[in-house]
Length: 112
Image (cartoon, rainbow, N blue to C red; front, side, top):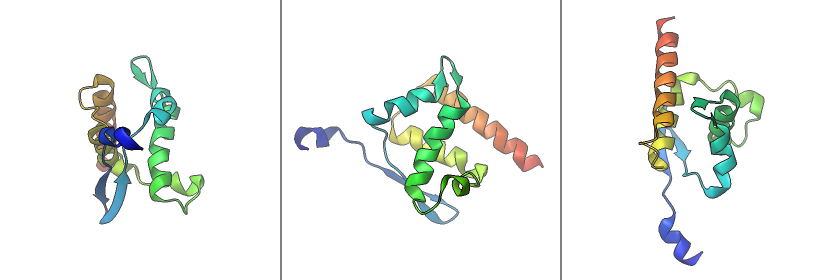
């Protein structure tokens, strides 16, 4: 790979329920996936689903998509925070709004 290696970000490993969860950085090849998560200033649910599913498939390659759909939403905030950190997206206002929406949904689920 040569000089390109100097630019590659390192993956982050977070703990979810005591298990390692890998969060590698997104690449230029992931651009359609990332852009699919947004429509203007709003979040596209299908695009965001595809983005999160990418990380779930990486961490649970033995599971099919139907099984991965059962992954608990309670971990989404931790996953999104790691995606944001590893990709240096902390200043993007759209990403911050996504985090706020996820936190609000989690708070609602915890009330029930």
